Amino acid sequence: MSNTILILNGPNLNLLGKRQPEIYGAETLNDVARLCADAAKAFDLGVVMQQSNHEGELVDWIQDARETHAGIVINPGAYSHTSVAILDALNTYDGPVIEVHISNIHAREAFRHHSFVSARAEAVIAGCGIAGYGFAIQRLGALLAT
Image (cartoon, rainbow, N blue to C red; front, top):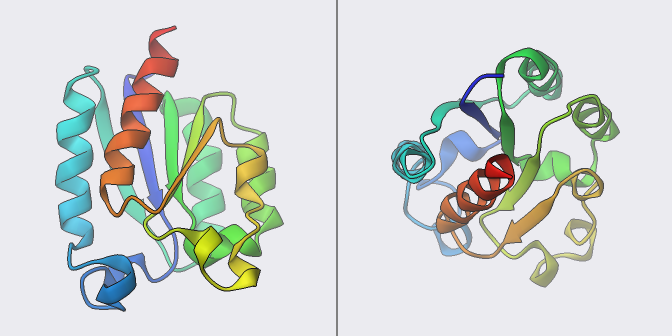
């Protein structure tokens, strides 16, 4: 298996730094990419980062990861609360999965309190801003080392 991890970002995350900075912060998706690359170096891991506003594209990337990536960090955005298709795709993936949310979804609207993806994730990190991606990579690195 590869020594790369896949970082997946769902809908509207391309607007980080512009969309509701009071909730999601001022950092951009490029800042997330730099943070992830730096965090992965400590575990001798490479990073492939992708973002899509389209559920099917995220499903395709998860399916492709079965053959190409040692682990997945996923911020499914709003698809967390609606997508059985993403959960089903993750259930076909044998490697570790860490779910990340920039905001604390449990302190927001009631419909955000449930995530379908959480049922497949080895860990869920929420409410830590983009630092949550770094925490996710640390946990993924530890899981891959065992």
